[in-house]
Structures are given as structure tokens and as C-alpha cells.
Amino acid sequence: MLSASYLCSSCVSFFFILLWLLNGCFGGDPYVFYDWTISYVTASPLGDKQQVIGINGQFPGPILNVTTNWNVVVNVKNDLDEPLLLTWNGVQHRKNSWQDGVLGTNCPIPAGWNWTYQFQVKDQIGSFFYFPSLDFQRAAGGYGGIIINNRDVIPLPFAVPDGDITIFISDWYTKSHKKLRKDVENGVDLGVPDGILINGLGPYRYDAAIVPDGIPYQLINVEPGKTYRLRVHNVGISTSLNFRIQNHNLLLVETEGSYTVQQNYTNMDIHVGQSFSFLVTTDQNASSDYYIVASPRFVNSSEWNKVTGVAILHYSNSLGPASGPLPDPPNAYDTYFSMNQARSIRWNVSAGAARPNPQGSFKYGQITVTDVYVILNRPAELIEGKWRTTLNGISYLPPSTPLMLAQQFNIPGAYKLDFPYKLMSRAPKVDTSLINGTYKGFMEIIFQNNDTTVQSYHMDGYAFFVVGMDFGVWTENSRGTYNKWDGVARSTTQVFPGAWTAILVYLDNAGIWNLRAENLDTWYLGQEVYVNVINPEIDKSAPLLPDNAIYCAKGPKLRMCVRSPSPILKS
Image 1: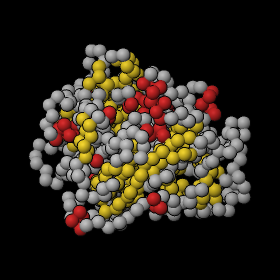
Image 2: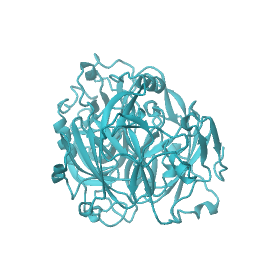
Image 3: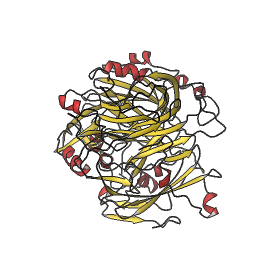
Image 4: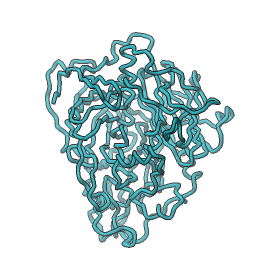
């Protein structure tokens, strides 16, 4: 059971450390320390026992609960049988891509090793999550929530909720992540998942003909007449999910670090990698419990009808179990409904967030664009005899030395700054080609989806403005439809099949930042690129190469791996 005040705090280990550490580059802002062991644990999400990735024995992992500008130190012990990196989806790591936890910027943590992440949640608020970024591992778990609270001096743009509840929704396969990635390498479609999980648990037995007996399900306890903040994250592999609660409205208030115009929805499409905050008021008569539902979107097989995640909202004065049919989803094939819903999500320009000044003080619609990239994807295809996915005809190849290390030590030929502005008339290829960003430039990126499924795209290090989306092929005339006033700022956006999505991003965060498909199957096969943003001036406040940096040659295979001495948290 999950109570409304659930924060997974039992997994947090706090301790003091020498004063000299606290006087480093982060100044006097508070520190919080976490000590995590990441290992395989046995769980039964869909009834049968299987191996999942847990943190300190938990699946899902603990909530990282911090406040704007706090410094976070996470000591990670890798007890898996393969290399590991954790990435912090939506955390911007200002000037510090060393801590980003993706293969382009970090050497993996070898099996049996520990490594300590140290970063500041500078000038951010909101709802995010972390997950393992290598080798399809997220398909086995290893994920958990991130809450960045407002500082006390900045009020919330709504009344303080009576409780704060984190909910993870995801497609799930009983096949191991190692077998799944092998299927993807061989061009085998993932197919229909075995289930949809809510907080790592299978469906409530809402229909005995569909759901077998004995599957553990999520029960969320609430009190009548209260308002709760629900932070909902799609941490799945590749399935867009529709989230809804029987007889309850979802008042959208925040998404991925931006307060939104407050609007009620009866349901919300949440695409892979996206995070939303809703206020839910327990204003029903509690004649019974209520269904919480996450169901697949845009699927065309009858087998998918059997794959629905169901949890239970239980009032303390409930008179009986939930019963009857599940609340209706939108039409399964209606992408127009979903696109219009996405367009309706607007930035709350009058609300303060990480800083006291209103979010709308940054008038993005008045800034001159310096670079334009039209990035076109394609379904998986054979390139040099292997199944690969591409962006603008290039499938990303991780170099033997991660990009940040190659740049730090001026290693020639590790990468090229020649990623094309549009699809070129040439055969697709595998290459280490980066976008050459201009520091404090204003970049326009148009994602054109030539695949047959919804794709989500995420950019590390930034929140970008989602200014437009439509079906068909983007043209320069499409700019006439852009929202230049209150387009929401976020880090993950969906692109519908046969459609485009346009974003604007202000490149004020120096570093090398990952721009990727969040759908694991397309990401794993090469659909990513890195954006290189160099501050031409010397910035003494920028974190240097970490003292505990791992140096590797041969990249993910780790044929040679050396760790520099670390003064703290050594195993």
C-alpha cells in the first residue's frame, strides 16, 4: 500500500562530511547525501517471479526529494553484472555535464565499482525522474522519482496540497532487458508488452477474464475532502499511455519544471519520458474505491486491449471495492485529440518558480533565432549489415573515449562538429557527428517524424519551449502557427507519426548535451546526437573534471578502465 505522504525516505542515508567539502564551488547551499546499491532483485510485477533492477532492494527506486539550489551527492555501487550509468531526466546540471550520466559524457561504472555523482539542482523546481541510461537497462527498472521543491521564499501558484504522491507508469515485458536488446539488434519488433505497471505493480483484477488472480497491485490511500499532488511519470520502453482516475478530474499544474496554466482534464496522454503534476481532490461520495488507469494509445491490435494498468484509489471511508467498467479512454486511433490536448498545455507566465520573477519574464518569442535544424527520423534500417536508426541520416556511434574526456584532453578525431542542418541526399551512415551549438545562441529545432509510431525526444541540460506541432511536413510557413507567448518549457516532447514538433532552446548552459529519442528501441539503435556548447570565455565557476573521474578506452566494452582517486565516499 502507498500512503499519500509516501516519499521513500527510508532509503535515504544522511551524514556529515568534512567542512572543506562544503566550501567548494557550490557555496553555502545545503547538501543532501544518498548511498545507493544498484542490483538485481526478485519481483513479481505480473505474478511470476522475474529479475528486475532495484536500488537498495527497492523497485521502483527511492525518491530523490530536494529543494531548489540544493547540492546532491549520490554514491552509487554497481552490483549488476554489466556497466552502469544513471541519468537524471530533466535535471539541467548547470555548466556541469560531467554529471549527466550518459555515455557521451561519462565512462560507465564497471560492475562491482562505485562512483559518486555530485551536482546542484540550480534554479529548478518540479517533477523529474532518474534511470539507468545504458544497454536497455531501464526496461528492467532502476528508475525513481526526483522532486525539486520551491524555496520557502517563493510560494506555490496553488494551495499547498495535503499530500504528495509519485506514480510511475510503464509498459513491461517479462523478457529480460538483455533479451529485449538482442531482439532489437536483430530487427525483431518488441511486440505487445506483457503488461502495464503502475509503481512497479501489475493490474488490479478488474476483469477476471483478463487479469489472472494473484497479481499484486497498487493501492493508494487517501482521506476524503483533501487535495493531493500526483506526480506521474511514463518511465516505460516505447508505449504512450493514457492516465485517468475514475470520477476524478486531473488539474494540471506543472510539467517537467514549468508551472502550467491550470486546467482540468478527465485524462492525459503521457508519452515515454514525460512527467506531469496534477492536483486531485477527493470529492466523491466514496460509495466504492476508484480505478486509476494507464492504458496504451495508438495501437491497432486486439491483443493490446488486454494490456492495461489498473491501481486503486482508496478513500478511508470507502464502502466497498471498485467495480464496473474502467473509465473510458479517448478513441484509440485519434491522434488529433492527443495533439490538441498537447497544444492546450500552456506556460503559467505569471507564476514564480525557481526564482521570484514570473516565468514569463523570459520573453522567448522576441529572441532572434541563430540556428535552425530540421531533424528527420526514419524507422530502423540495415546500415553496414546492422539494424540502426538515424537522425538526418546519421546513426550515432559512441566514440572509444567519451566526448567530455576527448574534449578535455584534446584527443583528435574523437568526434566531428558536422551534424547536418537537414537530411542530406546521401546514404545513411554510422558516425560520431555533433551539433555545433553557439553559446547563448537561440536554436530552433524541428523534429519531423517519418516513423509509424509516436516518438519522444529529450534534451539534457535544458528546458526548451514547445512552440508548435502539426501533421504533415514542416515548412517555413509553419512558423506562422507558432506559440510565441506561453508555449510550455519542458525537456521531453512527443512527435506524432507523420507530423512535426518545433522547439526553441536558449543555449546558455555550456557543456556537451545529449539530444535523444526516449523510446528505448530507437535510442538503442542510434537515434541520438550531442549538442556541443562552448563558452568562449573562461568561466571560473564551471566545475572542472571530477576528482573521481573514471577514464576508459574502448568505451562501453571497458577493456581498459582506470579511476582517479576520490577523496570522498570510497568503497
